[in-house]
Image (cartoon, rainbow, N blue to C red):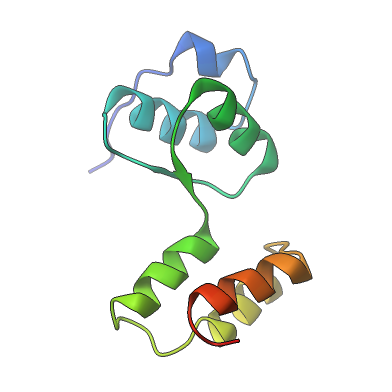
Length: 101
């Protein structure tokens, strides 16, 4: 069942997509939560408003550290094939954080 989230006026002012706005508003309204976002504009908004974030690559690193997945490399490739843009330097950093580089 979807959770209804009131979009913060501070976040609405950034004119982000509905999903990014909802995720950021939820995180802003619930202390201790991180917003999982990859969109560059949404990350800028989060930084400006002091909202903690984590990207999809970071989620993969955490999953690897917890033993939930064997490798981030193959999953990063699949994300790129699906259209997620990741710079080579970000890929190297994520693989290093996962102990794969």
